[in-house]
Length: 193
Image (cartoon, rainbow, N blue to C red):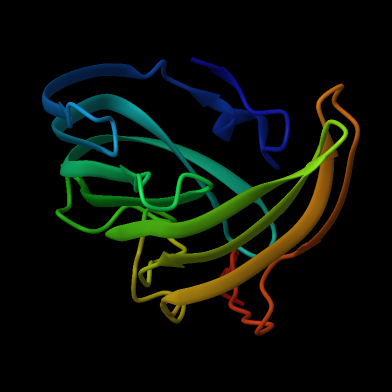
């Protein structure tokens, strides 16, 4: 609990402490040759007095509500023996989070999120190596406010990235990194006017 220093009115600045309870059940796998690693975790989280911050257009408001979330997190890492300098990794989260009091979505909590990364490293000699990588990251659409009808819903987004560089064994690196190469945009914070 505490007091919000951004609250407009003092009588609206106090909020309760969050209390979370989480249960997880996971599975881990690694092949005997260590080419493939896979992890999956089911989770269920209940948060009593979740601190939900919203902006009304003129003031920040902190409300306490109860949150319920269930989902699964998964990741896969593949390092094929036929290409020892290559890694492919995938991560994904399904998170069905809702306000336990109203049944509505929790703001800024996407149902799906994750990404894919391909990376390659090649020894150049004299303690240097070349690195190349490419990535895809995504998030599903989401609400911005406690009332999901108060403002337009954020669209889902997919962003691409790439990098190239040289790295030395003593920690020196020269990298050129590009993120969001297709210049995707969406609102990350929206409030009613």
